[in-house]
Image 1: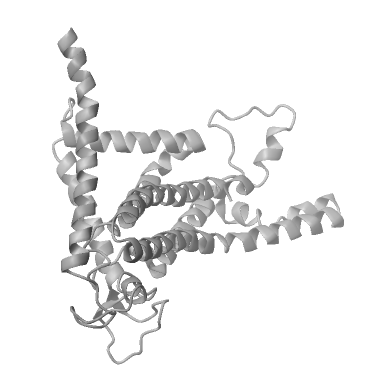
Image 2: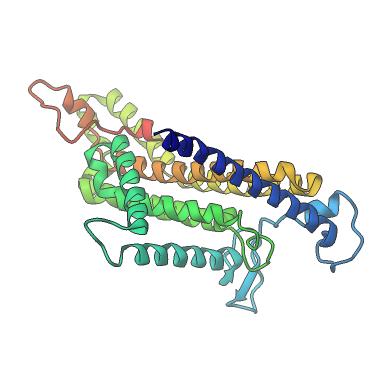
Length: 333
């Protein structure tokens, strides 16, 4: 019994030592890299003299505009940060790599499903069930059908965010964290925007869904009530077009800003503080993936909510449905 307690007490200490040893190795590696492979000016050659800290900072930073790996229309000029130019950029290439890796891991982990799961299947099932439980705890039973959508957004954005912390990504021109490119985040936001409006039309019908924004039936209660309801509906309609902007810019700003902060601190302090910042970015990237996927889920549930559902719940003789509380658009926003 004493030996078992001793072994249990020694296990956390050994893990702590391994973590400290790994951190020390990273710091030593950073210091040696700064000595033997020093940074060089942006666009220069290794060994060129640098001006500290300006060249050290610029050598660690990516421009907002993505690098074009394969130009599909060489005769046309590039359009800058927002790419309307047909091309395969570094962020698109990295996005394909992230998707391929995630799909490959999922297929390999679940190709032989067993009642008693092995290690890989157990991890995948635990991750999916955790996301499922979290989604249904937020949106109730109605959210169950949208768990695959929620999980897909979360996993893709999470690993896209984390890819920027892998050393080759961002150091090589043709590799860049997808979510640090505003074109990718705008694309994700437009996909989300399309999904929750399609679900709104599919669940409520064209007339029912449009009545949320054009409540012409309120004119039956008087001209004043109708004008006020129509004004509120138009405000709601305008706010719908703000959602893609807030979704895309929040994700892009946090990921790109984190990379800028990490690049600046790496140039100024070489090792110790950047190691701590990587840990912080690891956590913040997780939070940003969760925020985007949760907002997509909430916007979808708000879109399928009828305009008069809350009012009808308070009418005499109306029974509260068993499917859970309604998600109001104002709360979701």
